Each structure stands twice: as structure tokens, then as C-alpha cells.
Image (cartoon, rainbow, N blue to C red; front, side):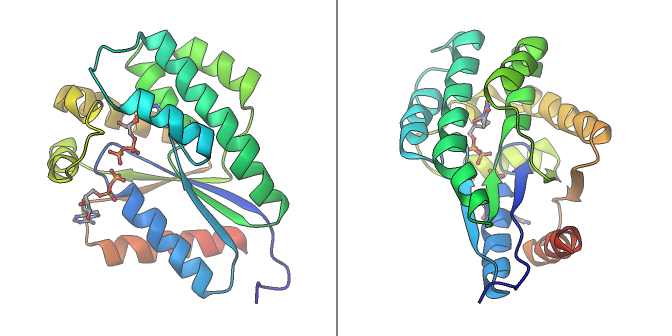
Length: 209
Ligand code: ADP
Ligand code: TYD
């Protein structure tokens, strides 16, 4: 049974590749479900059938496959579909939506790395216009993150192939963004998964009241 006063909430996980976002998003979803909350667990790029098709276009192939501008449009198109088809419907059912990455990833990877910060923000305002209520930034040394990410096998290596210097720039950028917005909670990702999960659950329950 959902808690009697169940309210919608929109939570995101952000951080560099391999920082533990997917692990912790899954664990938070499981803990909240155990407490009776209805949860939609989703991810970007992807999270809806159309957006998952775009995911394959942006994550596979040569690192130079797309210009920074084209890539930004693809990520934004995927996010718009994700918002329309998955996120908004779940929030209107009063569910807790947990997304593994959202617009802050675009601010970092296309805005900061692609040097398109003002275009990213303009396009966000025009086409997305929504921010999470709470954002968990899992902060981790990029060398550790990269070795964890490269340990996973798969074809989605386009971004991991960008290397350590980019991941260092992303880490610094995420921390700077977190300092600007009160919705962020910075989580030390260099601990065991249980301790991290316990901290995130407690911060989430505090937010839900
Ligand atoms: P992300 O989604 O941020 O890329 P993942 O959750 O997929 O990160 O984790 C990357 C890899 O590191 C996975 O193999 C996962 O099992 C492992 N991992 C996740 N969290 C931890 C942790 N706290 N300590 C050690 N390894 C971890
Ligand atoms: P993801 O599958 O979350 O990778 P990981 O589990 O390794 O963190 O995301 C894949 C890549 O997509 C990641 O390197 C970041 C990148 N990305 C962007 O460049 N812009 C975006 O808007 C999003 C959502 C992701």
C-alpha cells in the first residue's frame, strides 16, 4: 500500500561515468518500493522507446560521429520524449520518478565539454523547462570511475573513450554546478555501496517528509 499522503517527487542521479549512479538509483528504487512508495526508475539517454532509439545513435560509434551541436539536439530530443512519455505521466500518477542522469549531464558533457553552455541552457528552457526536486551528485575520483566504467563490457564506449582529462573536467564542473543549486546533494562515492545507499535513502526520506 502506498503511504496515504503519497506525493509525486522527481529525483535524479548525476556524476561521471562509473561513479555508481546506476547502482545507487536501483538501490534507492528498491528501498522506496519496500516502504510502499510507487516508483518509476528510468535513465538517460533513453527512458522511453523513442529515446532509447536515440540512445543507440549517440552512444555507439566513433567519438567524432556528431558535431557538438548535433549531439546536443539528439540528447534534447531524447529528453523531450522521455519527459512526455515517461516522466510526466508517472508524476501525474503521484509516483516517485528516479532518473539515472537528466539535464545536468547535458550541461556538463555538451555545455562544458562542447563549449555550448548558453545554447544548452536556451534549448533547455525552450524544450524541457523542468528540473528535479532533488539531485544526487555521486562524486568520485575519475581514475576510479574510469577503471570501474571500463570494467563493464559493452558497445556503449563512445563517451568512456574520451578519457581521463574529460572526466576530470566533468567532475569539477558537476561540483561547481552543485554549489549553485540547493537541489543538489553531493555524495562521496568512494565508499562501500551499502553506506552510500543508506545516506541517499535517508536524504530522500527527509525530502519526502
Ligand atoms: P554509473 O552508472 O555511474 O556509470 P555503475 O553503478 O554502473 O556506475 O557502477 C560502475 C561499476 O562500479 C559497476 O561495475 C558497479 O558494480 C561498480 N560499483 C558501483 N558502486 C560501487 C562502489 N560503491 N564501490 C565499488 N564498486 C562500485
Ligand atoms: P550513461 O549510460 O549514464 O553512462 P555511465 O553509466 O557510464 O555513466 O551515459 C552515457 C554517456 O552519455 C555518458 O558518458 C554521459 C553522456 N551523456 C551526455 O553526454 N549528455 C547527456 O545529456 C546525457 C544524459 C548523457
